[in-house]
Image (cartoon, rainbow, N blue to C red; front, side, top):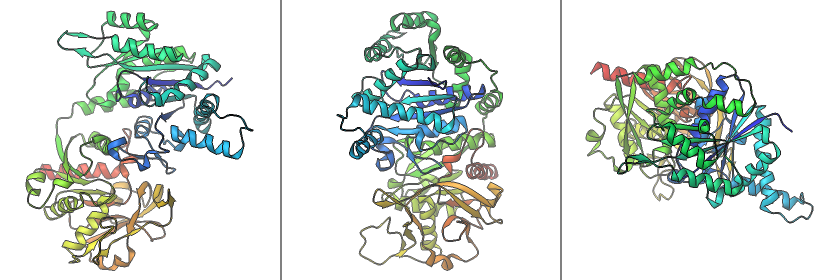
Length: 536
C-alpha cells in the first residue's frame, strides 16, 4: 500500500464553480506547510487533447514546458504552486481509451474481453499513480472535470471508488457544490447540494468534505442542515463565498481551516503554515487605487477564458507595479480605420494576443498601426508579432503586398510572404512548434532590459516563422530583431527603437507568469503604460 496521499475533487449542481481554483488553493496551502504537491486534471471529453478544439468550446489551450497542449486549469496549478506542470498532469478520456485500445491491439490483454471495468478504470488509476511517481509528490490532488451525473465522467468516478476501496487511509474526497441564494425567498437553498451528494453516493462515493460555493457566508445552522442530509459532520462543510480576486481563495481557505481539516483526515503532521508573503502581496494589491487601461484586440473576446493566462498575467504585472490593470476587450473583426480612434483612444497600452487563421487580421493591423503612429505602448504575442511585422512592412517599408499564407491560404495573387510555414515539428499531420525553446537576446534592447539575461527559455505554440529572406529589408536602424534562436535561424522577438515600448514576441510569455513573479515582458509593458498615463 502506497503512503502517498490522494485528494479527489468532484463537482456538482453546475459547471464552472471553480474546481481548478479550489484545487490550486488547497495545493498552495499544503505546499506552504512543507508538502510536495502535484495536481492532475482528468477531462471527460473524447478529444485526445484540447489542441484541435475551438477556444469557444474549451477556452485557452495551456502549453506546458514539455510541449503538451492541456486544459487551462493547469495554468492555475502553475500560477498558484509556482511549479511547472507536464503532460502527465492532464489526461482525457480520449487519451485513456486510446492507450487501452493500443494495448488491446498489441495483445497485452491476452485475449480478454476489454471493458470499462476493469481495463479503463485500471488505466485511470495508473494515470493517477503515475502523476505522483513522476514528481515524487507527497500529495496528489486529482480534479475530475465535469459535473456529477454526467455520463462522460462515470468511468473516472468509478476509478475513484475502486481506488478508495484499495487505499482508504490515503484518500480523501472533496465535493465542490453550489448553495444558491434565492432573493425572492431571502434564503440559501441547500437542496441542490443534497441532490448532488445523493448522486455521488449512488455511485458509491461518500464525500469527506463539502466545499460550498455561494455569494455569501453560510450560517452554522445551514452547515448543520447540509451535514445532516449529506452524511458529513458540520465542521467538514466549508463555505467558499465569492471573493474579489481568485488569489484571495487560499487566504479564505486558511481562515476556514480547510487545509488543517484535510491534513488531520489524512493523518499527516500539521506543519507550520508559511503563507505570509502570499497574503501580504494579495492584501496590498487589493488596496491599490491607481489604474492603467489596456486594450486587448482579439477575435475570441466573447469568451474571456480564451485569454485566461493573459488576464492573469496583467494581475501579476499590476501587483509588481502597484497598479490595477483595467482591460478593454476589442473585437478585431469590428475594428477598422473609421472607428479606431473611438475604440482605442484613451487606452494606455494595446495588446494583440495569439490566434490562428485570417479572421480579424485587418482589425489587428489597424490597431497596430494606431499604436505605432500614436506612440501608444504595444505588445504583440505570437500572431501579434506576425501582424506587427506585416503592418510595418506595408506602412513603413512600402511593401504593399506584404502578407502571410496563414492569412491568405487561398489567394490567387502574388504576395510578399513574410511568414513561412514551420516544417521542423509535426503534429497530427500538421506542423507546430510546441513547448519550451531557447532565445538569445540583443543586449541593447528593451527585451534584454526586461529579462536582464542574454539567454531565455519560453513556451511556443505556432506554425509560422518570420521568412528570413526578407531580413535585410527590415534592417533600417528603427526595426530591431531583438531576440533570435541561438543558431540565428529563427526570429523570436522584434521591437521598434524610436517608440516608448513596441515589442513583439513569437512565444507565449503569459504561460510563465506567476503571482510570485510577474513575467518580465508583462511587467515592463504595464510599466510603460503607466508612464504614458502619468505623462498626459
